[in-house]
Every structure is written in C-alpha cells, then in structure tokens.
Image (cartoon, rainbow, N blue to C red; front, side, top):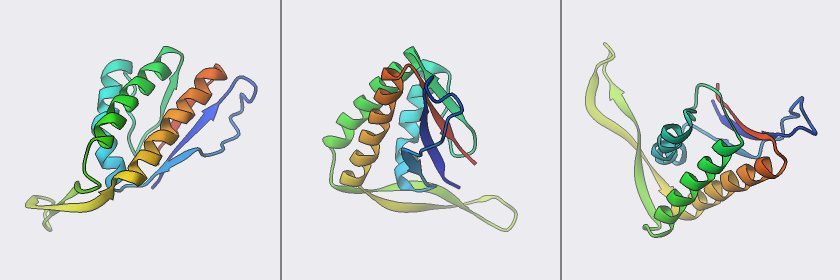
Length: 135
C-alpha cells in the first residue's frame, strides 16, 4: 500500500502521473508522520497512507516550510535510529504492550525529504499542485 506523490500542472491537467516520491508503510513514513501532522495544522490537509491530499498555492509553501524545518532536525541527528511502526495486537484486537520497530537511516530519509521539497518547488513553479495518493 504505497503512498504516491506526484505533481499536476496546468499544462498537464489530466495529471499524467509520474510518481516523484513513493512511501511505504515503513519507518521512513512513520518518522515523517509527525511532520505531516504539522503540515496539517497549517494547511488543513493530512498526508496519510490511506487517503489523498492535495497542496497548491500558499499551502505548497507551508508544506515546504514544515518539511525544511524537519530536514534540519534530521540533519542534526544520529545516523540510524529505530521508529515505532505499529503495535502488536492479541487475537481479540487488544494491544499487548509490544511494539513493532524498524531502523531508519538518516541518509535515506534525507533523500526522501529532499525529493518532497523538490516536488513542492516544481509544483509551485508550474502553478500546479502536488498530490499525495494513498490506498
């Protein structure tokens, strides 16, 4: 269930989807989830794995600003760390207290963040919109 990110421009209104960034249900997405919540506070659009979000105009600039702030945090951090990606449930669907964790690498996360910022810049320059499409 990937989350695809692409740009739709006025020159291509049908939005021929050339995926610029793709997130999986993994530590990289879940680390950035708090960044996406910060974006939502400023724009009203929530990026998640299961629904769509569209940013254009001033909201693209807000998106860029938040993601750039988060990039600075990532840059100043350690090279690898673990991220909680979920919680273990029992047969009745109740939390057992155990969590699912995976390791993320700073370099890979920085590349993903840079791709997000580049996509936002491309959409803003084309007076288009950046679209996140979840499953």
